[in-house]
Length: 294
Image (cartoon, rainbow, N blue to C red):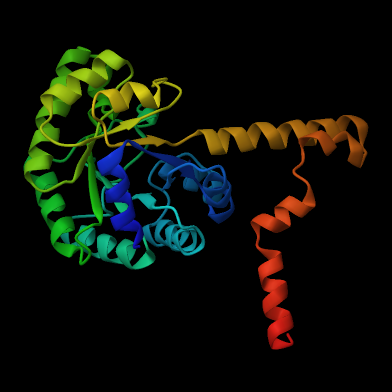
């Protein structure tokens, strides 16, 4: 079954969790744990590929390349952060076509002006949003560009990432997210991605937006999947644990080695080599090499 159709089928029955990944190997690990889907995250791929924060410095080609390699290697659905679509409606169409060809099951598009940046980096530079109508045009372009009707188009408003966040009451910002969410749904978005920090906020969005919702789990949004599932959310994205967990494990192993300067100091932090080779499917390639005399 095509990954996009599988994702929609899963969402009909229950909430789907998409765990953030930054490369193929991290995606393999997510798949092996039995998590539903993977999310090719802007934050994570910028950190992994460039060693930089998600400030819109990663090109569309770089993001699409990561997505293509991930989708080729895992069988779970792949959802991709496509920033603001990398330009206007025509750029959005090209981005959607390339990501669909790469094997994406879902594509997330934001309503920021270019250059985009992660919403938690509001202090780096002031952020502005495109008009509601301009974003609706991007959504229409995205839905027109897909050839697979099951490909999910996910729209996210970055209201909380604008410079207004510090001076405008939260209720007003949430009201703008609701207005934009309903407009984006009317333009054809399949899911509206909302940023709720509490179950109460998640409930407000669920009642006020007339479309299926995608939620977020993170350091500033410590919700549970059951919180969102009970409210009818269809997808939840959890971007940071893979990168943050990898950083913690790597640092622990290297610090132990620095102090003792011997292999055994790191052993408790390492996955056995046999398991690493299992993740990389060495046995399958060994059989192929034997079959073809390679």
